[in-house]
Structure formats: C-alpha cells, structure tokens
Image (cartoon, rainbow, N blue to C red; front, side, top):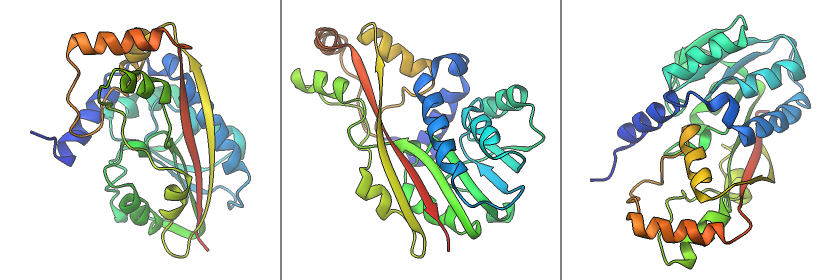
Length: 256
C-alpha cells in the first residue's frame, strides 16, 4: 500500500531525526546553505528582521544567515524534534525553537520579513500549495528564500539504473521554470540553478551517505530493488566516474 502524505512525512521526520552524523556528513547541504545566505544578504531586509526558518537541520543555513545579516528575531524549526534539539545546542542563538511541519505552518505564528529554508522543500508533497500558504505569512516587502533539489539531480545514479533497465527512486524534481511558476500572484521570482558535484568512493558509499544524512527516503510508490538488481546498478555506477551531481535550485520569492 502506498504511503499517505502524513505517513510519508512521519517517515521523513524519523529518518532525519536519526541522522546523528548529519553535521559532519552533509557537505553539499553546507555549501548550498552558504550560497543561499549570500543571496539573502542582497535582499533589502529591515533592521533586526523577523525570520522563520523551516527545516533547520543542525543549523547550516541559520549560521550562514546570521553571519551574513547580523541580529534577527528568529523562529527556528524542523519537522524532526531531534533536529530541533541539535540545532538548539549547536547554535546557541537566542531564538524561538519549534517543531513545525513546513507544509502546515499555523497562521497564528504571525508574519515574517523572511522565510528561509535550506534543502528541505524537496520533501514537500505539495510544494506550490506550501509556498502559497507561506506567502500569506510575509510582511509587505518580505521574501521566501529557499534551496531545493532541482531536475537533473543525482543524474549519475539515475543513468546507472537506466543502463540496467531498472526503475529509479529519485523523485521528479522541478526545473527552473517550474520553480519560478510556483510564485503566488503578486510575488516576483528569481531562480538560479547550480550543480554541486561530490566524488564518491563507490556506489555503496553514496547510498550509505544518503541514509547517514536522513535523505534515503525514495519517491512515493517506489519499491526497493531486489539485491541482485541493486548490485548490478552499483557495479555500473562504480565503472563510471564515481561522482554524483546535486542540481540545486536557489529561489527568491519577493512580496511587493
């Protein structure tokens, strides 16, 4: 039976909650956070802005934004309670730490000058709907800034599977045009795509690394490969360049 959306979100939260080595293993996520913070630094935010962060993880993006813009009134959140606890300990920021499902933020939380998220929106079941709901929480002139997996991510693993005529569990990520089209009416969209490449010792290391950072949840409806089929795909990957490319969309949606 296919997972319902709430059941899938619970599985994702549990996977990230158990990612004890996220801080040291999530190298691409750290680089993406620094790049997104650089774009946020160019925004015209008010002094001491009110910021909501969704999917904080261990605080890569929080730290990068803090370095880039200085003092802010933070609400720092993640769907995984264990991640919120890790961020609270690691960051040491005076902030409002909460467990929040980014797809269902309670409007009573108030309005924000910036809603930011690093590499979390790809896990949303309904990203356009979530963005529309988040846009309603922006102050005039506010912005939603997020990074997310984009079309073409992990192409090397997808090609290894295709060469063996095997299905892929990689979700169907949106391209630049689709991301820009998610901007609600009245908001302007700026989308940039960047490839972050990561060398891999072998396919086993790559797949284990996804589980280590909590990112091993496959696309909805995907059935795990039989061991023999998985070994064929791994051998095909190992015969290639042994790298994976994360194609990242960096998105800024601005309210008038």
